Image (cartoon, rainbow, N blue to C red; front, top):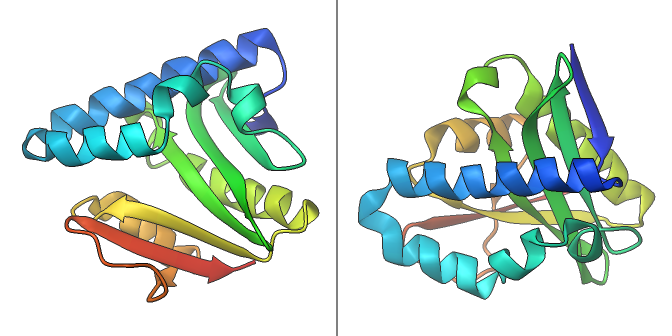
Length: 163
């Protein structure tokens, strides 16, 4: 059974931090030729700083961090932060490889949409590596489309959708 909850406790924050770093390791392993692009993204996003205290960086009323569990074990992570004016950014979508194909990603996105709407967000954007086909397929199913308002970036697709 998949459950999705906001990260509030110390134990949840520690599990979310572990999953966030597992996401980075997975990206680096899968796309070694894109190490510079990944590192630039992590630096611009202040990844290391944010994951040490996800409850500060991604917490209401300006964001949310969600933790997915499968049969009680932490297996997925997704968050958003407000960019102002009703615009927010989805970040750190990750599902442990052993839990993929079980609806965890879609459940995380559905719950994140609801949390963002509840905080007054009206539009969500994200950036994804252009070869991350599994994630891109999920984003398309969830209603994300190309975002022409953002400047092009080599190797990255910018997507958005209304909430």
